[in-house]
Length: 125
Image (tube, one colour):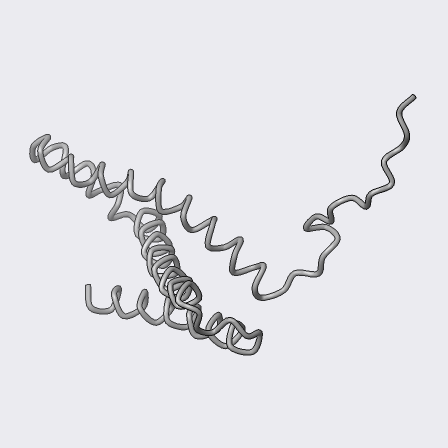
């Protein structure tokens, strides 16, 4: 006869109140996936150059439309977000900034940096 397991169940996202650290962690994973998909779009654009003028014009029409530019804007933000958060993780790996106030401060700085870099890129480009 098997006895009932009395151990507590592991809490899930529905149990915990979202915190900045958990939201940024989930967003880091989501931007990683978005970068993979967005990189396919950039690859499509680059390979269209080899396809000739008609192929390139077609790709430019798609990526140059308002929707294509919107997708590229968010892809570039995902790139800067993922990069900034990766640098933040490298700091943690070296033992810096692991106390809770610094974690929250670096999270806010990282979000601000990703937005500023994205806007700067689109203003310059």
